Length: 73
Image 1 (cartoon, rainbow, N blue to C red):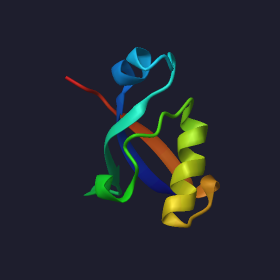
Image 2 (cartoon, rainbow, N blue to C red):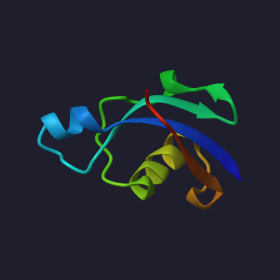
Image 3 (cartoon, helix red, strand yellow):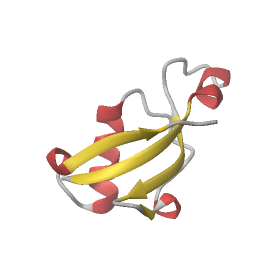
Image 4 (cartoon, one colour):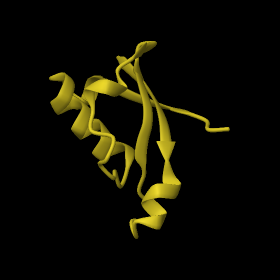
Protein backbone atom coordinates (compact mmCIF):
# COMPACT_ATOMS: atom_id res chain seq x y z
CA UNK A 1 0.00 0.00 0.00
CA UNK A 2 1.28 3.45 -0.93
CA UNK A 3 0.23 6.10 1.56
CA UNK A 4 -0.52 9.60 0.33
CA UNK A 5 -0.90 12.19 3.10
CA UNK A 6 -3.08 15.04 1.86
CA UNK A 7 -3.79 18.48 3.27
CA UNK A 8 -7.12 19.50 1.77
CA UNK A 9 -8.35 23.02 0.98
CA UNK A 10 -12.13 22.94 1.25
CA UNK A 11 -12.63 26.72 1.51
CA UNK A 12 -11.40 27.56 -2.00
CA UNK A 13 -13.74 25.00 -3.55
CA UNK A 14 -16.65 26.44 -1.55
CA UNK A 15 -15.89 29.97 -2.80
CA UNK A 16 -15.62 28.65 -6.37
CA UNK A 17 -19.11 27.18 -6.16
CA UNK A 18 -17.91 23.59 -5.81
CA UNK A 19 -19.24 22.95 -2.31
CA UNK A 20 -18.25 19.57 -0.94
CA UNK A 21 -15.16 19.39 -3.15
CA UNK A 22 -11.55 20.09 -2.19
CA UNK A 23 -8.21 21.09 -3.64
CA UNK A 24 -4.80 19.89 -2.48
CA UNK A 25 -2.59 22.17 -0.39
CA UNK A 26 0.21 19.65 0.16
CA UNK A 27 0.77 16.03 -0.81
CA UNK A 28 3.26 13.55 0.61
CA UNK A 29 3.97 10.07 -0.72
CA UNK A 30 5.35 7.78 1.96
CA UNK A 31 6.71 10.84 3.81
CA UNK A 32 8.21 12.60 0.76
CA UNK A 33 6.73 15.91 -0.41
CA UNK A 34 5.43 15.39 -3.96
CA UNK A 35 3.17 18.45 -4.17
CA UNK A 36 5.15 19.74 -7.15
CA UNK A 37 4.09 16.70 -9.22
CA UNK A 38 0.36 17.48 -9.13
CA UNK A 39 -1.99 20.18 -10.40
CA UNK A 40 -3.13 21.98 -7.25
CA UNK A 41 -5.92 23.74 -9.15
CA UNK A 42 -8.06 20.63 -9.60
CA UNK A 43 -11.22 20.34 -7.48
CA UNK A 44 -11.84 16.77 -6.29
CA UNK A 45 -15.35 15.64 -5.36
CA UNK A 46 -14.13 12.69 -3.27
CA UNK A 47 -11.12 10.70 -2.12
CA UNK A 48 -11.96 8.17 -4.85
CA UNK A 49 -11.63 10.90 -7.48
CA UNK A 50 -8.29 11.87 -5.94
CA UNK A 51 -7.13 8.24 -6.02
CA UNK A 52 -8.03 8.00 -9.71
CA UNK A 53 -6.02 11.16 -10.43
CA UNK A 54 -3.01 10.04 -8.36
CA UNK A 55 -3.01 6.63 -10.02
CA UNK A 56 -2.62 8.35 -13.38
CA UNK A 57 0.05 10.81 -12.23
CA UNK A 58 2.18 8.23 -10.45
CA UNK A 59 1.32 5.31 -12.78
CA UNK A 60 0.14 2.97 -10.08
CA UNK A 61 -3.08 1.09 -9.43
CA UNK A 62 -5.86 2.84 -7.50
CA UNK A 63 -6.02 -0.26 -5.32
CA UNK A 64 -2.46 0.45 -4.10
CA UNK A 65 -3.35 3.95 -2.85
CA UNK A 66 -4.34 4.85 0.69
CA UNK A 67 -5.32 8.45 1.49
CA UNK A 68 -4.58 9.95 4.90
CA UNK A 69 -5.76 13.46 5.65
CA UNK A 70 -3.40 15.97 7.25
CA UNK A 71 -5.34 18.34 9.49
CA UNK A 72 -5.05 22.06 8.77
CA UNK A 73 -4.42 24.48 11.60
